[in-house]
Length: 211
Image 1 (tube, rainbow, N blue to C red):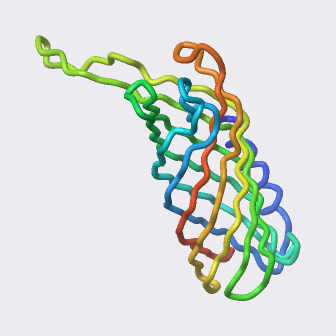
Image 2 (cartoon, helix red, strand yellow):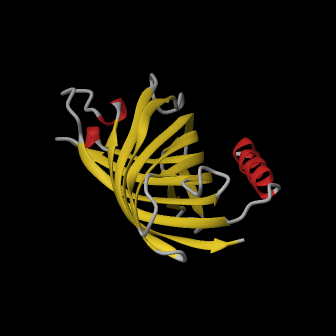
Image 3 (cartoon, rainbow, N blue to C red):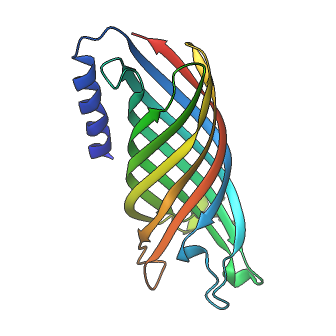
């Protein structure tokens, strides 16, 4: 996490130190439907993909200027998170995980004007997490952790394609993104590593303000 934040600050320091005719900082938020992928979401008994899905959110903070390919290239940082649930024919195949990505992001706008096809790549730290299970102690009345939340880490890669439609102050976004399945290992929870990823269809908005 410290390296991620340091990378964002380094990029911002470099770009803000340069004189430019036009500079813009923008922030976006997206919300959509996610579908899990990877060996983690395959039934061990039948070797078939489990049915499931979940909700996902994305946010970024980006910088652009005429110095960066004439305002077509945006650089910054991004965060993506999905809550993924999958289940097979029996309760033993139930899966419930959180999948996140803390990343540096580059986005390219293919056209000028109010309608822009876009493509981006976010690369950083991928995090898989299990839910923390808490119960109430009938004697003391206090909450107790039965199963602690566990975490696994890997390379996080997330390409995204879509379009933005709007003006100088902001734009609506529709996109398709995929956190590419990479290998995670939670030794306290799994006997061997698993791959996990997710694709997501999202709607959102990008707010822009000049410098």
